[in-house]
Length: 597
Image 1: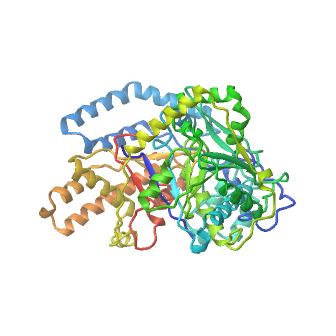
Image 2: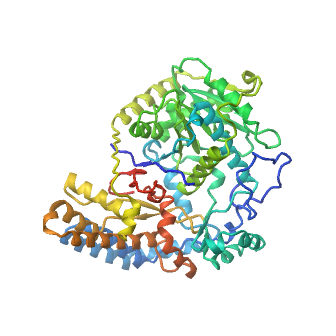
Image 3: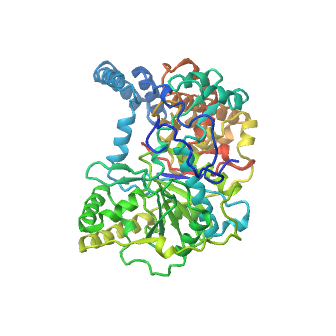
């Protein structure tokens, strides 16, 4: 088995849901409480975002046939064309009309929003490997700050600063700037903040700026996916003020926000984390953390047993915690070890259902592992980048800082769970399945130092298209065939947009792959380069169509966004080539080749 998703991204240098009103600054809103103080409210553009368009049926069929062409022989393709024709002239048109009618009745959201949540929440497969991805941070540039306690404290404080900045409406709105000289300026921001929210998107559009959907952000904190029979539930309690910490399979909680909503002093957080790191208790005989790695229906049944067995209040503390901080007791050996550790770990020291786990290894190596149902990479990557920037450029403590003189034994609560025989049996079974599944996972990497995105751009080739082409060539070389591949593209330019699928396999990638793998001696370097250029051009077209919701009926100004679609998608795409250090190739991700979503 290979993992569905492994994402490794490199950093670049309100209470309530979407549209929540900006809250007044708290009395304690001094230095260190916020990441930034945007003069444009965080959700200023949300109400006026354009709606995700429903693609025309004929365009969908045309794109489907284009994606099938490289996978089928002539006879298979002829039959597929006939099926598509019958579908278009029959039930397909009826279903399309129903979709359009339903979309018109739900103008407050996008036509994919409900089905998208259903897709994730009704899936019964374990979320580990199948859904949850991770992003690994670079080390702190100042090596002495990579001490586990120091980095855990700084990243925790920075994460809570993000929370406060978001909830108080001071986080810069997520905007894609095509002309930053005009739109990413104090002058424009001072003007646009007075434009009503119902019109603000259009004001940004006038200067070639395109605000992105931020409706997912409120699920970043105090959120958990709860297992339920048949369909899970997303739970959020933004009144909770405590952090959940996992170490050696034990659960701890302590407040990181005071009663006024201000961040507890960094030295106090440091003291509590030091206290947890000094706990010498042996690992629990029955680690509860295995249960969220189970089949969702099995986990739902075991969760009910836990609640009825006297653990309801304790589980509520896990579910409502601002996020989960995982402190591992070993250093990271290499990139392969990092991938296994952050993608799944040993099953004892993660709570896979939390909106995200912030993981800090013994040597300070850090990553974000997140549950995927509530949101996509756009929100998590913004959080990821802001936390890295703040924790390294404005760290809350230094390696020389002393923890506060406080009674951590009173402030830190170690959670104890009452486990009956049924739950213990469930944990044993979950562990056996977890261990067996992880043994089937193979991760490997190679670092290629000759080239990279800048070189490819000089050759007028899209780095992303070359990465996708490389996947096709590798699969053809190993298995002798062309298969469908999947690449995600953000549709965050639209209200409640999620992602759209790019199908990179094409007649162009097939022809180019076969030329390189099977017929390299028959083609000149110029001919091979021309084939790569054709792949790049077509991949750019696919990316633009995906980013635009696969239709020509978008607001006219949004078409301009297609010129920057790669930058938009690269923020989220598994191939985040633009984030790589200059001169290095795209090593930020591993996407598996498979035949469907």
